[in-house]
Length: 145
Length: 145
Image (cartoon, rainbow over all chains, first blue to last red; front, side):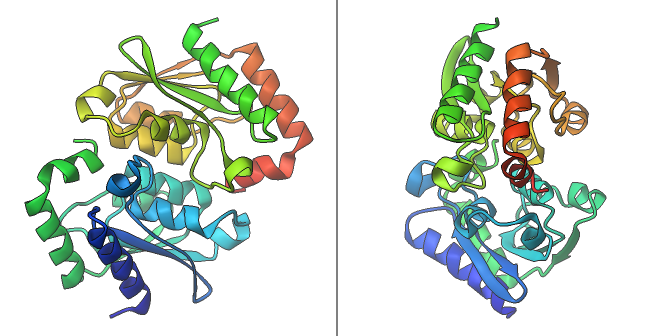
């Protein structure tokens, strides 16, 4: 498995172990992970810390030139909020574990010039499939449904 | 002045008093403010807590039906990240203090069916004009430039 996606999956599993929503993300700059995170809705009552947002938050304040040389990895296709953060900071590339469980704003990201790669990773698919079956209300809350 | 915009301006001024970026926001549900916040980049080293995000975070976990009956007020036109959060949660209406200093993703929000009202409030304009003149690097960092 891609080692960066593997790190994002580790984050997702950490979140699951905390009783949270199993979505993880890492922000990678020139081959190095500079931020990693996972969804914190349950753990912190957070409505803004999706996995990608948590990775961005944990990376701390970075120069625009850093974001523009980053790839963000996420276990699940990014929603409108996370896609907006990617557009705001000009992150040029997103690697997505899977988009079968949920397809976010990939079209909009592409329109904005962001390169998207979808891996359809079986671990990522299984994590979301099991979670969505076990906690459909929590999943719907996370995507505003 | 609209009392909700006034509350958002109070938030912006609080942020300024803390040495932060003077942008504030309130989330209003059926006439009641259920979340208020301001930009926390300087205060918390946060890259995700723009004013609108902080208001959403402070409102806590809400049902989709609540967001769909909300208006979000913000002193400045919402960037891609904050607009993405508005789209995610299906907030149907955004009242913007001003968009002269910075125009965010208003077109995209309209495409997604969000009603936008821009007040061009002089207090909001002055807050950003003075801040952008005093701290251009910090302002650029906040919008990923």
